Image 1 (cartoon, rainbow, N blue to C red):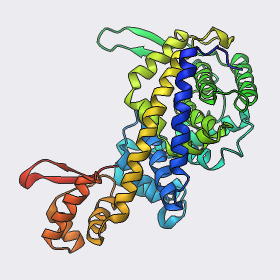
Image 2: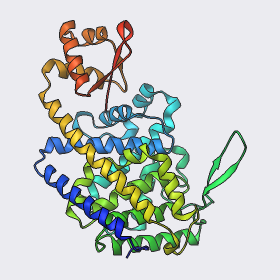
Image 3: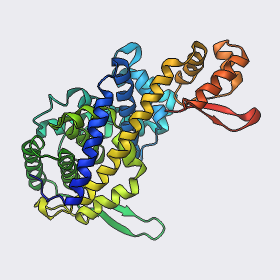
Image 4: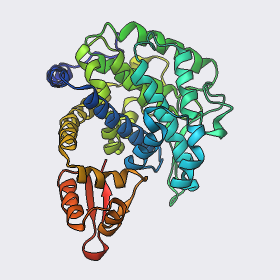
Length: 375
């Protein structure tokens, strides 16, 4: 069972949210294979981008979409090692750490989306394996990827103007306390996720307890958010499970990043507790209700975008493909005319259409204006 008794107010909110789950699920029942793939890719790219940027990576969603396209060339998944030099040359090596985080996060989320059922019951070995995949492309993490921490990993806020150091999170110490807490957490999760009437609250407690333990030397935030998605996919609620592959939860955590950290701190005052009943978890439940609601609203927006994509003319598709050939191109009309060989008037008409339908955005005015892909 949960470590806290949900209030009547939050249970009433969850009942209303459940109605949205059912409504969204029924709306998505008639998805074609291509549209389902389109929506899932939107969720994947958005979650990768947001989760890594929350930890201060710098790649945009457009750049991550390009990386994903490169790694799925000709419909076949390609290992990052084979494309690493090409990707770094295009995105510049000063952002290599961000790229390594993005590719690792992509691998973990892809595994979770494709193998959620097979990953239940959850084990410590699975969480360690996911952590290893998260950091496998970061050479400096080779010694600790997939292994529990061996040194303290306090999260400290430093005010460089005043010199103030403030502990944001004082997690479980390394060693027996961390390993015991993880064993207890995994057992509790397996015993609870299929039985509790509110799996969203189970996912909430699960991710918070994981973050409060902070079992790995680094990568805990990214892995914790991935495990939250895994919990949604592993619940017995067919409506929640059925829509979770199409919602970009991390996109809305990123948009509320300051509140996210404030609420995490509110739950525990930044201190690990061996007894989870000492946490105040309902505020985090409210936070996740908010971001799930916002995420559900995205689904209809991207369904409309998919519909618009199917209706584009051949010339509009040709213009759009100019932008997808590179990581984050900003092109003038003259560049597109040269690349496509289409008449200038045709290109301008296509650009107007693509801008109105939010496939592209116009930057600047007059002779210096350029267009850029929107994700």
